[in-house]
Image 1 (tube, rainbow, N blue to C red):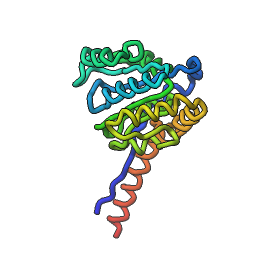
Image 2: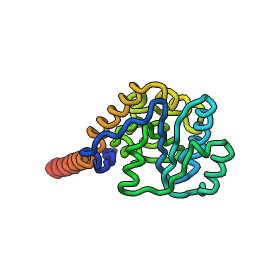
Image 3: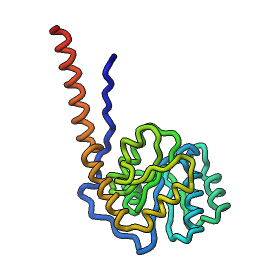
Image 4: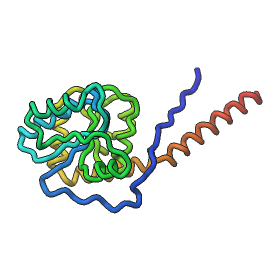
Length: 217
């Protein structure tokens, strides 16, 4: 049986020398979703979770960042309007470079309620910015988000579960910041480019060593 090697990806650390982000005003949270507008990324699930939170009386905003997919900007805005969330949810379109940096810096919580993914790099980026993340058990996500440590895992296609976990983080500044620090530490340990390159080099060296040993038998 051939041995399988796993080498999780990494992303460049572009904020290690940045000043800490300013605190949002008391009682006001900013939620960030960064991916294309695709049904299976959980776009409508997050919108519905936001509606639940508004009914519960929470004061927050939720920014959606990314390109249009099988959900158009028109469909997105229509859904938001139907639920009475035009002052709460904003679609910002694509963001690159410093503009992308700013949306991460201004966020308090990152959410990706996906139903179809492999190893989403946006979760690594969110960890880089010290954001607690809420996502689902899909693909390699359980190897990225450490449940109850760097964020929460929720059931797929479950807006109530998502709203409940968002409520936990909105109500507990200490826990939210603790998870954010843990996320940044996990990123530094496992998901920097240097960590990726070190693991890859170790795998290649192990393969070469085993081939050499095999030939010498």
